Image (tube, rainbow, N blue to C red; front, side, top):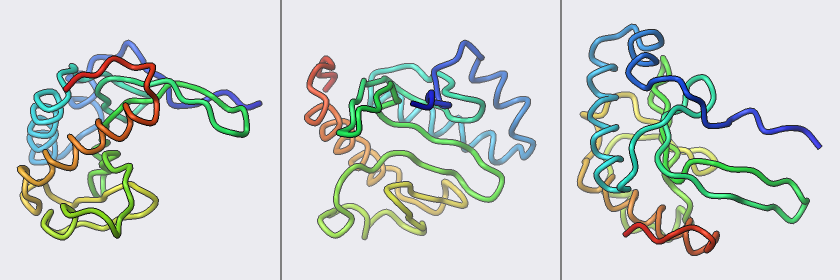
Length: 145
């Protein structure tokens, strides 16, 4: 079975931002997301793979037998948009997505061009829901809320 590519690393988040994020506005918006996700999750930011900033972790095992660790919530400041790995629910059932602001979504990943385009209070609620759903699905983790 293939090994997971996205693993927690020892790289510094601030070092990553300085090296990877050339746009000053995107770097500042990344810091806003880091502060928000740290506050909501209670975890400090850690690097996962070469370009994902994650908070907390959980261990998963799929029906196929594949297993690994992943951040509970995360984002990546990609060139075209922020990739927010923060949604585990059913898109149609979410009361928050319609209030979030300007975004695109594919397979549970929310794409945002600018942090200013979304309501951070609504994002906080999505983060809380994601943490709750993740810890319900993978109950071996300690409840952090």
